[in-house]
Image: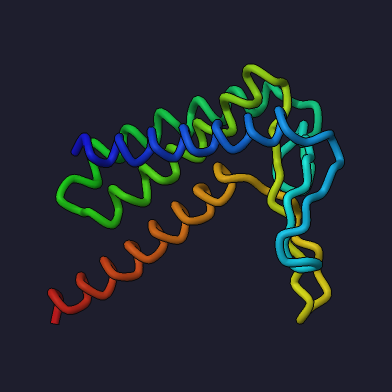
Length: 158
């Protein structure tokens, strides 16, 4: 069980380290091309949620993130026992939630830096960070677990 908490901790550490590197080594708005124009590092700050929603409403993020963290830990200990995919998804989600929570708590904003352009649909994806990626991966893992569990339950009923 503790290995899963280790995964969450590792994600928080990598998230905070990468954000620290960006803050220490890049000017706000500076972009470093990695695979131009498709991928780059862009020093950006976000005072809201995804796509800048609820900008400046930090108190909402403090409350919601605290409830989310409590909920994740509760589900991990009560619902996810013996379900490795569910456990992994919850802990990846936890790492992402804590990573961005630390930024909001100590910086008053979230450091974002991954800049992706998707040429097929001519879309400049919102700038994100390791915590955001972890949140997305965590949700996908939980979704896959739910689909897998539903299939398993249907087979048992037959």
